[in-house]
Image (cartoon, rainbow, N blue to C red; front, side):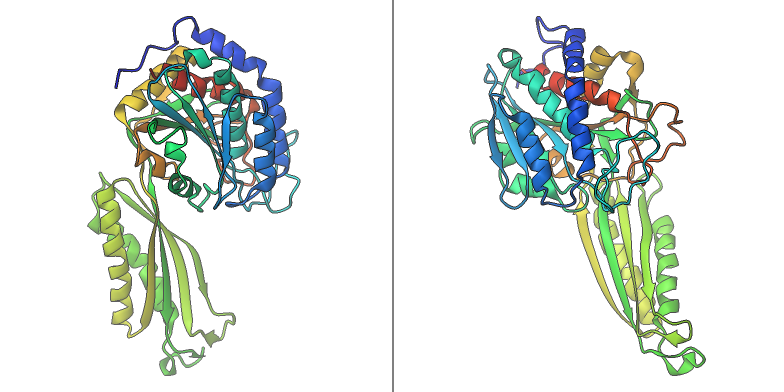
Length: 411
C-alpha cells in the first residue's frame, strides 16, 4: 500500500474544505435537531433510518440497508483504485429522561434521549458524504459510509461486520482503513480533537451473579441460609481481586451497578443478584479477568455453603487505533483545525465502543471531538450519558470536514 498522501489533496487547501463544510452547517443542524427530537433505542431505528436515507437522497451513492438491524451502508466510488476507506457514525439513543438546559434541543419522546451525541455523529457523516460526493475525482479509492444502530450495548457494529459492511464496495475492494469520531459534552473544549495510538477505549465485559440460599424469618437467621451477606462479601472480594491480581500498569476496573435482594425488611430472601461491568485495556488482562473474577465469586459462595450461578459475558473488545492511522488523524486535525486544536491523549478512557469490532479486522483510528456547550467548564460539565448532557452544534462542520479529509488523504 502506498503511504498516505499529504493533507490536503492537491488543489484542495484544508481551509477550503473546512469552509465548504461550514456552508453545510444549517442543514446539518436541522438534521441533528430532527434526530434529537425523535430518539430511537437499540437495533431497530426506522424513523432515524428514514431521515438518513432522505438526507442522502440525490448523492451518487450505492445504498443498502441491513437485515438484522436498521443500518444504512452507502458506497461512494472514487476516481482511483487505492484502498477503500470506511467512515462510521452510530445512530442510536439511550433510555434516559432528558433534563436539557435552557435553549438546548429537547427530546420529544419521554424516557429516551440522545445523551451520547450519536445524533451529531449521524449529521456529521451526512456532511462528510456531501463533501466527498463533490470531490469524487480527488478520492484515491472508494468510501464506505457506515450508519450504525445499536452501539449502546447491542453490538450493532459486529452485526454490520457479519452482514458484510467491510466488503460493501466489493469483495475485491475490501475496507483497508476505518475511522470514527465521538463527540464529548465535557472534558474537551468545543472544536478540540483528541486521540492516541494504541488502546483508546476499554474492553467491556459483564459479570452477572445469582447467589441462592434458603429464605427465612429475619429474626432467626440461623434457621435460614442467607445469600445477602455472601453477595456483599463477593462485591468487596472482587475489588480486592482487582488490586491484588492485576498490574496497575495494565488495570482492570470492576463496578457493580445493580444489586437486588428481597422485598421486606424482616424477611431473609432466597436469593441475591448483582451485575457488574468489567473494563480492561489489553486482551491479556481481559482474558485473565474472565478466569479470575468468576473464580473469586465461586470461592466465596463455597465458603458460605451457598449455590451460585455465574455468567461472564465479553461484550466489546478493546478499541485500539493503529499507529499509522492515529498519526493520520493527528496530522489531519492539525492541518484542518490548527495545531492548538489537537490533543494527544496520555491515557485511554475506560468507556467502551463497538467500533472495536471494525478495528479488530482492519487498521484505523477512533478519536474524540469536544462539543462542550459555551459557558460550561469542560472539567465540570455533565458528561455523555448524563440526563443533562448537551452538545455544541457548532462542531458539526468541523467533524464533517475531518472525516472527509481522512478519506481524501488515503491514496
